[in-house]
Structure formats: C-alpha cells, structure tokens
Length: 189
Image (cartoon, rainbow, N blue to C red):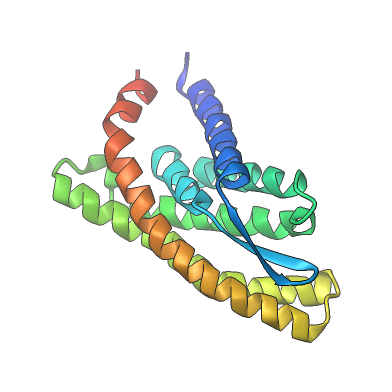
C-alpha cells in the first residue's frame, strides 16, 4: 500500500476515533433550557490525530469526526459548522507546531515529551481563547440566539474549554508516548 493510501486510511480511522470519543465519552451539561455544553476528551484525539498525521490530515480527521458527531446528535446539530472550523484549527495548530519543532526527528524521550506537550498546548490554548469568542459570534449572529443567552453559553463554554484543554493536553501526550513507536513502524512500512 502506498503512503497516500495509508494516509487516507489513517485519516478516516482517526475521524472515526474522534467521532466515537465524543459521541460516547462526553458528559453533557445543560447551560440554559435550550443549550448545552459538554466535558469530553475528543480534543485529545484531535491533537493525537495531528501529531500522527500532520496538520492538514489530522485537522481534517478531527473536524470530520466531531462534525459528524454533532450532526447525529440533535442537541449539537446546529454547532456542526462551528465544530468543523474549530477542530480543524486545533488540529492544524497542534500538527504545525509539532512540525516546526521537528517532533518526527526527536529521539530523546524528554525532547519528545516536551515537544508533544508544547504542540498539544498550542492547539488547545488557541481553542481556549478563540472558542468562546467564535461561539458567541456564531450563536448570536448565525443562529440568532439572544445576546444574553449567547453570552451565558460563551462564559460556560470558556470555563469548560479551559478544563478540557488542561486535561486533553495531558491525555494527548500520554497517548502519543504510548503509541508513537507502534504507529510510526506501521505507517512507514
């Protein structure tokens, strides 16, 4: 199997993993009578996708997997376009940071750990800063939700996103360290 075919297959596989982790591993929190937010580890798998596949394919795996999860859940269906953009950007930033820091060339465990943590943090800190702002604008002006409700959901999302980012940075790093040798040997065959 050539490298392009493997990359496409792994991108699809990671999209499915992202879908499963969000769909079956989230804790939904009601914010208002009509809106919810969720605590989940799916951002860890978005980052993991990008560390293994690179910024574009990893970002696409996260964007497609989590957007599909939104589309199949009536509580999140209207968030699918926002999810696609945000998850792609999280993955792209994490993957691009890993490339710039030359993660694939690292051999010392401490260098790998540091690079993975920095790469994961880059994508997830971006999410902490941009998600509440983008969420407010999206809900207020695209979905036409009243300003006070959009502000409440943005504030809740900001807190939940910060908690998710901290946990997902650690989880993505642990998973990467556990899997990178096996993944590299299979992917590069």
